[in-house]
Image (cartoon, rainbow, N blue to C red; front, side, top):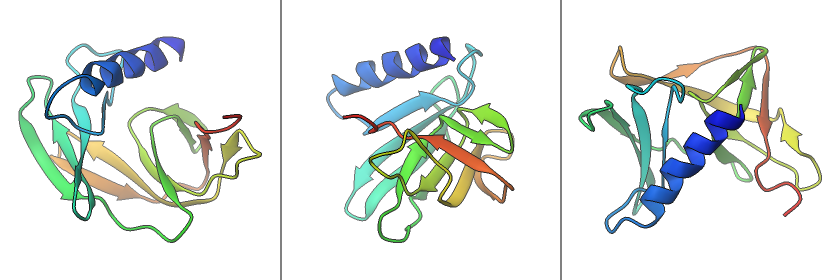
Length: 134
């Protein structure tokens, strides 16, 4: 888990100093050097999600789905049906006094094989609250 977090922070840092840059980017399979990646680019409606090959070829893109008030998006860092995953995008409502949350609205999985972002319906979701304690 520490390795995955370090990879995520490294990728985020690289993009943070680029000129024309996504708001956030990460490998969906951090342990795989040929992993596909997700980038989120700001636009006038929120964000565009892009799914890219490891060679930076666009597989698909979608406008970020709307969420109810109070919900935000976790990019990975969630346990889905008991398995901790980095390849998910979860709309979730965090409370400032809790390190995790299970109050989710939607769960999306980028699928390079199908060139899509798939909406899934897990039984349980628990996401890390990255803003906890700040």
